[in-house]
Image 1 (cartoon, rainbow, N blue to C red):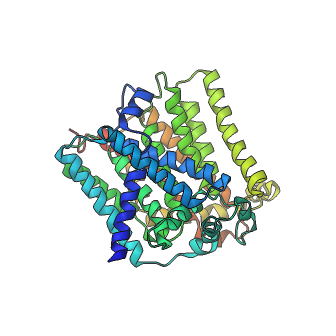
Image 2: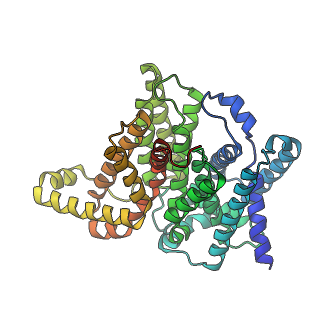
Image 3: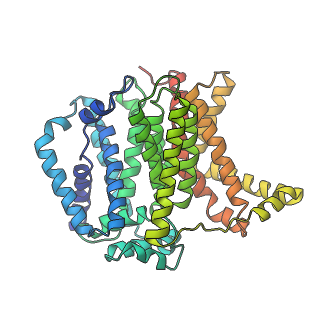
Length: 438
């Protein structure tokens, strides 16, 4: 019984701390977007982003986990007490139903994790050792001494340790509840993108997305859902950028900062940040000077990550030593090129079949082509990102010496974690076909 109470308590804590510091009113006044009004779900999502950056800073300052958590919780409660009017959402039947649906889904997955306590391979062998560094109050420099992949980014491990350390019962799996909360919040955020005829259709779409994206295996210590969900946050706000007209620089900055978080979850997140952010800046309507400024800012952010990991943590590396000589040899040797491309392509299609969200994404693209509908600039942006995303995946596997093994154990997860970024292609197709639309 006390464990059930603890799970509900953890949910209440999430609801409280992620209600600080932004409200819809603050966001609307700050960004003043003509085509979009921020809602409670937006404020909640961006508060999570704010909290992640606070944790990133805290990880380098070696702030006591209990002090950080309790201070943030107390400030959030005080803030809610004095600002409760800003959080009262319109008590329409639709909003009430969606809120309770949100709670039911979260509690259901929380209970599932509590009953299935096994950590999978990466959770035990790659991430748990990093989690214990923070859980035990050690310095961030100790990360370089872990036995497996010490150079892997650490933010996901820090969050895991933070909520584990501050859970009511002190159980490990409470630390992983944040991954679930982030994931479910992202699904509700992205489905808020379309107007529906009634609440039933919205719930139907949410359930559909949950069914085709829920993978319990990845919640057993893997970091994929952190990238998956953060990319959904980014794609939601990218879709509201008017690529052809003048832009809000503050809004562009917000999108870049959301994308940048991926650099701190996993190594490949750095490449996703480079691809998605650079294409975004190049394709939106900005002066050449502004584009140069934002591209310089992207480079500056990458340099910051390098400096922090190299000179504060003490190590910066990648899992595979990339040899341009070997890559050029593989590409210029026709037989090796065909063999490797065939193997990589086969496993990509297997991954598409395993994670059915990709099938729906590809169907959405096919529908667009079949009906000879012109791709608007936002759809072209996501299509370009998809193309470069696949080129990156193919290219990175050319660097692996044990290609067959890496294809079996990692390609499907790499395919999955970026799939959230292309959910918008599905929603844009539904919008164009006037399905479920008011």
